[in-house]
Image (tube, rainbow, N blue to C red; front, side):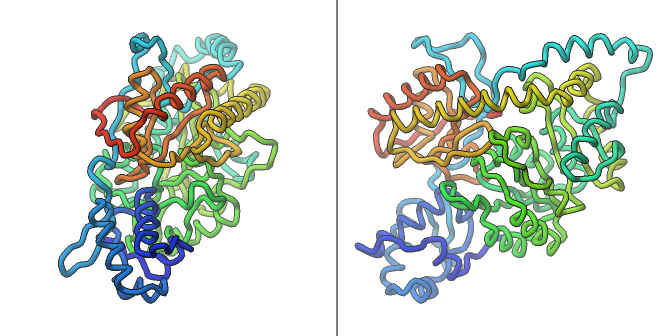
Length: 483
């Protein structure tokens, strides 16, 4: 099912585009919107006549702009059907799914993996393991299978939601083997192969694959201007919901990955109302909720505005990536279905790891120390980019673990391939795209030590100086996982 872009909406998106000449300015504006995913792929563009009237330009201007857009590979004209958004084949979504192996550094001697927005363990993890080991013997007389999760951990997670203003009982919590497992369980429990599922774009790449594996037909909802302040293009989201009526919608309201946006309470209420209008159930990923870098109060959980929402949390960003423990907060009436679905996939999470996480959820001092460290690293990365790559643009987020950075020209996929040969591993924009595009964007995490971040930026800057303006590169499939 193709979506349709209304003329008035196109006029809003292109804004005050350059008009010397107008056809070139319009083509450039549309190309950027399609390339960044703000006009989703396969969206039917308005007719030339409608665009002419909406923008106050001649029809010849629109005809020339559309023709140039097709020639550049950012649109396709279908006889009798119209003009549809697309991207060149070399900017289609990259599929990179294998962590760079430790110990296989290139000949340059540099090996900095910035694919993963994750760092070392939070202070206190080793002590939590020690306490968990002391508690473990009490469970060894049991069979060790807990499909719904360790009762003590379920209670702690429920209490954590209650402290955030969302009343929750332990019976509403299912412990999973990480956030990706939680996504897969919910999608499998609530949808059937072929059902439509709306997902933000750009978005966490592994969520795309987890949802696709269940057979869902993904419908992308474009984020707003990555360099602006709104974050979510609620008008586009509402239009997508109306036109596609998806069964489920996956969203990251807390420091969205990769853009870093935090959804305000007014936006949450608006978004939730739009979901209710189409009876779409939200899968809310709060994996990064604990990564706020300021002392400001966080908005109420999205589920406070959408009572039928399924909320996902994880210990990986809060504590350590080696703790593969996540959880689902769900309406009570769906818990049995989630558990029944879960046992078809695995029989439960590591009991020992659950004991460790139960200890860590009470370690508020460790989170404060981690916050100060990440704030310093974020600022170090931002300063290095401003110094060595002053033409690159980004918005400084108040949380999360990475910067979403726009190159002034060229292909991020090609640059990432060139930088990789010098030992710095980066995730280019197409990896985070549901369909394609975003190839002038890079996600650069700031979870690594400061010296490593500065060194990585210096390597990127050296490579950028020699990088051809029109470079293109198709990366090998199955190269690495993006965490």
